[in-house]
Structure formats: C-alpha cells, structure tokens
Length: 161
Length: 104
Image (tube, rainbow over all chains, first blue to last red; front, side, top):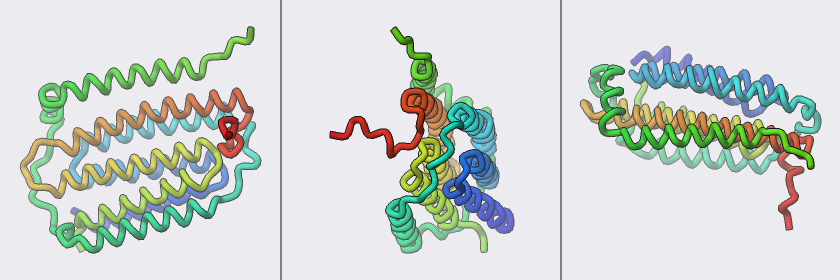
C-alpha cells in the first residue's frame, strides 16, 4: 500500500471535511463535501474495494451532493443569521476525538501490516448479493422505495382549504 | 511507514469528530445533514479498512455492509432534505433554533 498516496489523500480529505464543517457559506461547505467524498472513494480504491469506491462516487457525488446543492437553491433566501458557532459542540467533538484516539493508540493488535490480498471481483460481489445477502437486498429495495415516496409526499404542495 | 489499520482508524475517527462538530455546532439544518453524511462516510471507511486488514480469504462481508450502508445513507439524505424543504416552506427559515413549537 502506497504511503505517499495515503498521506496525500488524508490531507485532502481532512482539510475538505474541516472546510465543510466550518465554512460560513452553505454552498462552499457543500462543494467541500464533494472533496471529502472523492477522498473517501480514493481510500476505498487504495484498500482494494474498487466497486465500493465507484458506488461511493456515483451515489454520494452524483446523487447526495447534487441533492444538497438543489436544497440550498430552494431555500436560499435564508442565508443570513446562520453565523455563529456553538462552542459546546466543539468541546464535545474534541473530547470524542481524543477518547477515540486514546483507545486506538492503546490497542496493540491494530499495528499489524496488511495481509496478502487477492482482488475482489464484481462477479463475487454479485454472487454474494444474490445468494447470502438476498434478504438484505430486498429490504434495501423496499426501504429506497418507501424513502422515495415519503420524500415526495413531504415536499408536495400543501393544499390551502 | 506503511499504512496500518491504526492509521486508517485515526483518519476515520478524525472524520467522525469533524462530522460531529458540524452536526452539533451549526444552526443551519443543511449543515447538520452534512455532518451526518460525514459521520456515515467515516463509518464506511472503518468497515472497508477492517475488511481489508482482516484474515484472508473470506467472504466480502465488509464490502457488503458498506454497500448497504451507502444505500441507506442515500435514503436518509433524500428524506432529510425533503424535511428541510418542508420546514422551510412552513417557517420560512431553516435555523434549527427557531423550530421550538414543541417546547413545553
């Protein structure tokens, strides 16, 4: 696994995430979120999960980021008065990070090198989806249908009697 | 220095904390959704990293969980953004501090 690629992707991803969390303008934050998703997809490629990386690019960048940008467009009169940071949230997030870091650094079994790896083909993923994971697949299909219908009902125009 | 599981876990915990920061400290509803998306992406990174550094060969459990998690995140984003639009139509605002009608 390439160390230089790891460091470069880490810098890009974390700076994008910080920008997405702290920039005052909503549209800038949404575009920084795209950078974070690209970095995560690059990590998936680095880890040998090419299919998940592609799904990440298609679903997150192609659908979720565009959806966020459209929502910003539809609610754009509400830009003012959203400045100001709640410092309690900052303290809680820092505490969570320090706690997780302490646990990770104190677990010695995490420093082993990666085992040898035979690449996972899309055929294997498809076979697993159609055999062992057929019920989760059906449930996700049902969930997506319900979410789609629910989202449509939520944004339907309210009829004023 | 070869990337180990530890480094991936540190990166994903940093991403999770930044997502938590965005979800807790911003007052705009869309920022809260962005924070939730960041936290879900960090969890996906953990799934794939544990799958890659686990014993080989094995069934692609981590990959499957990550794929289902991405699908559920897409559904969550669609419903969440629809809620933001509905709230904006009703209150003319997406500041979550103003949505206090249920307060006793």
